[in-house]
Length: 314
Image 1 (cartoon, rainbow, N blue to C red):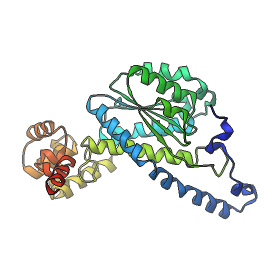
Image 2: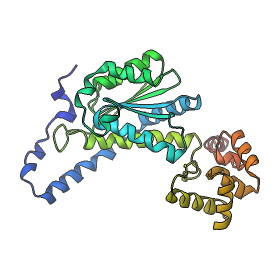
Image 3: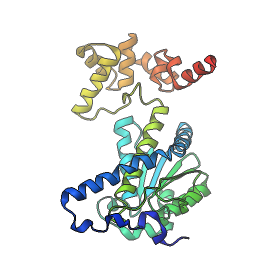
Image 4: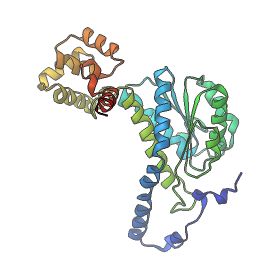
């Protein structure tokens, strides 16, 4: 295994040698310029991200789960994404899971030594009853965090799908991944502080993994989060607006169908657009695997329909 000082994320960039005596404005400009390189680095990894999304969707359609594992900043990014999926996409709390080295306490307090315990990841995955239907996404900026590598090794042994997200080339974690995603973010402005560019890259990738997967699972109509869970006033207003604009109805109608649909936006839209009752709308959605376009009879406008149309044109 290469020395830690050979990792790009641990190297010191001479351009940043005098940051401690820079003005605040100069320092902020330098950090901002460094951050601008991250999306470009991520763009180079998009083919691998696409493969990871396809793997995740295949496993979720079979009833499996998406499980993030990581330590420190990487672990917190995974936990954050997992926590956002139920309100955004109405996933069950156990469909997308975030595991962090050191457990719940590590979300708020640094438990730095926890990342060195490879065996702990196995115990954490055993506790959530990891199985072959699941996909484990290991998040490790260095690409060699023992907790993540140990978790991926165990996942491979179980037969789960595996994805490794790293910010160094030739990462050790990649060896244990069905889909390795390596983003070369280079040295940090603050040498070795991978909560900066590397953390941003991981967040961008995690955003794509979950969001694109939920698109493919039919939890989005156009670009609207029609499977959101209404849990506060803001989300209720958003739900009403989606029904109004999508079904072309007024506010009282949107409020009425939403109430009848128990605040389930897809059901309410189907009711408002087609005039069917709640039970019929729910049955139509069930027959369409929850994909609103198909339930509305817009099958030719689905991903599959668009692909078929392209084939006919060819």
